[in-house]
Length: 106
Image 1: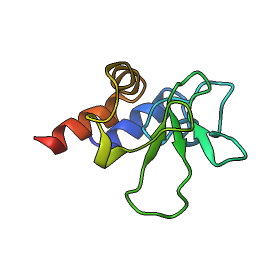
Image 2 (image 1 turned 180 degrees about the vertical axis):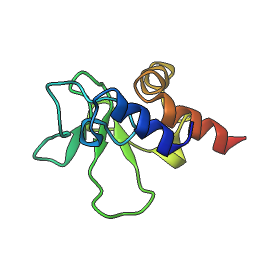
Image 3 (image 1 turned 30 degrees about the horizontal axis):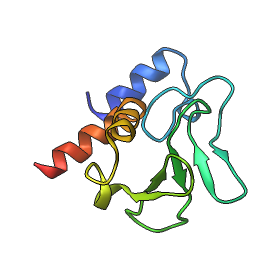
């Protein structure tokens, strides 16, 4: 399914684009925008364990953390610097990212 078909399907179900997160998943009803902390970390789903660092306009810089202390560059550190539990958590919360990163490593 291409992006156009995906969004057409979403719209046919009454979901507006603003109700989708950056990965095309429906946002939880209680979270229409990312939850951003004062130190620049955000979550796309309030129940996620993965934090994303707001890197401003840095192109292709995606920094994640599970505790906001240990930072991982998604393209450099995934999966080899993550623990097995961290990788499992990330893959569960962001399967599209996991698939993309696995594809890029092949």
